Length: 181
Image 1: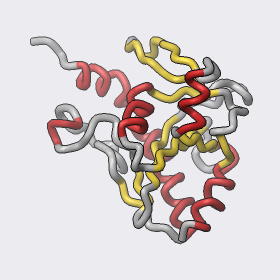
Image 2: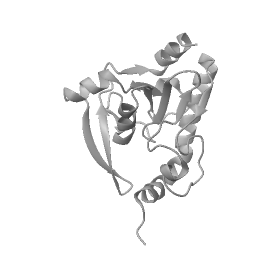
Image 3: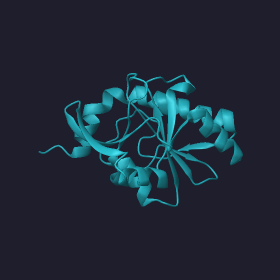
Image 4: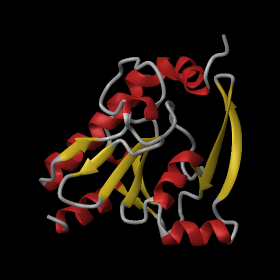
């Protein structure tokens, strides 16, 4: 019997879920504590480290839906980033499926919380707005598509320069959210 792509990906990365869940929990806790907003776990498997059989669609979730939703707003947040720190100024990689989801849902204000392998430090988190500036940078070749093999799985990403206009600090994002209250 052939192994599905979703099962293959889950098997390859299940050892990383605990660390990824810590990043999600840190981002969610900071947003709630520092802005007063309620944050809801949204995407398939968000807020969990449990192995869930099947693909997101099998459970009523849209593929690549973001991890978090800021209640009472159209703002959603995907939490991602490497599991070990990388060199400051390196490109920030975002899975192409997440970007596709963002552009398929223009009614949502889609942000990526990109954590540099540091789970308990706001300075280790950058926020990337996947919107018009992002799309313009793609058209101009500033944000490019790259592929990497990780854990024996070929993956495709958009490489975002860390100093691009669509990237802001986590603290600036938190300040922005406070004004939405």
